[in-house]
Length: 349
Image (cartoon, rainbow, N blue to C red):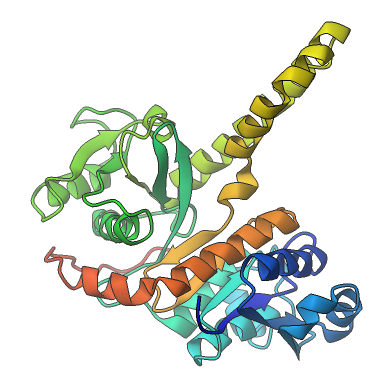
């Protein structure tokens, strides 16, 4: 990065805000020294923490607000009553050109609703989707939607496939990324009608050479495809299950090396390999989901993450900003010619 890059932070969003947000920003400041931050939240709380983080204070500007979106707030209620919240103001900074991206660990539904209202969607996209990296045997893939849209029509799934293709090209560096629709079986007759209609549309589109049809849950970690497309309900369950399994395996491994003296001795020799394993399955490493389809960069961090995880979410925002993701996705979307008839939207989850 040769120029200053400004990131807006919803300091009050998350289970352990504002502590982990500011500590995460401090870690990100060390990784990306030319990044500066706009901090939105309760100023006295922020200043008390900044007193212990003097280097972060030098590159941060605090914008006070007492309004905070609660974790259990309904998106429609947050839109009406939290217009001056830390979340809304941080998003507004991106919409007004004051920041290149916004990062929040707050209420997902409210963040999506506010971001969609303030940033708008890209041409040809009805609904934004939450996308994130997913570790696989072959490296990394992208999976979407992870919770923004509980119910999706065939046209929404096709749009997700297009956005996932562009993301894989521009961010993961895939030349011709392969695409799969997550289903309960690989056979053409499996799954609900929307999935079958989406599959038919993709086979008749420009993405046909890259489309691999239906994939199953075990194909996600196997890296069968580069882009995994699903509705938000299924995607959210899949990713949360994977995170839980990673923690379970780490716990089992820890127990295995502590049950006897000989096992503890073996741990000493296996420590480098175990450290590598922990790094590969650490959910914090992949923290930072992206709202694809918006005319601006919005990154959602896990609400329960720690400072390192939040720093990684900031890193995603920095990478997307530096590489001009929005400009690239606009250009790529303009090259697709798929008949996407907008339908009345279902409730956003």
